[in-house]
Amino acid sequence: MTITITDFEQPPDGGKGLVRDMRVRWALEEVGQPYNVRLLSFKAMKEPTHLAIHPFGQIPTYEEGGLVLFETGAIVLHIAERHAGLLPGDVNARARAIAWMFAALNTMEPPIFELSNARLL
Ligand SMILES: N[C@@H](CCC(=O)N[C@@H](CS)C(=O)NCC(=O)O)C(=O)O
Image 1 (cartoon, helix red, strand yellow):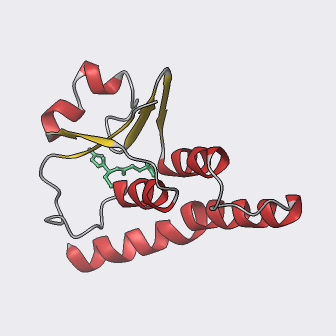
Image 2 (cartoon, rainbow, N blue to C red):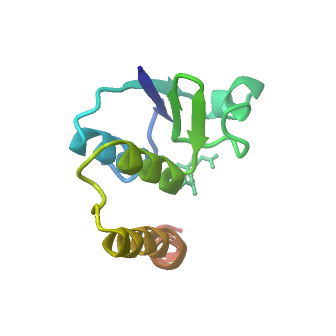
């Protein structure tokens, strides 16, 4: 099944890998899954076609057959559950790895993002 993700047509970081599609690309590369990338302008991201697959009009998104996902945590978890190599097989070890995924997104990313914004602005 072909996988398609979305990314900025013109990344604000100039393509340095700081945009959140990197997490999804990294997971797909690690498990050896080929994927297509649909590039979107800021305008196109807020239009009905994209809002139908991402309610907040953001990138990245993930499409695979009838499955459409948004939120990098959900996308990476889906990839990790579908393909061997990203999550441990042991149930407790798997739960701990998933706990770190939530920690990365809910506890670690917000203050790092705020600090970056404060420094930038
Ligand atoms: N929590 C979301 C955040 C997605 C997000 O903030 N995407 C940014 C790029 S890194 C975006 O699309 N920004 C443009 C906008 O919000 O209009 C996720 O992890 O997928």
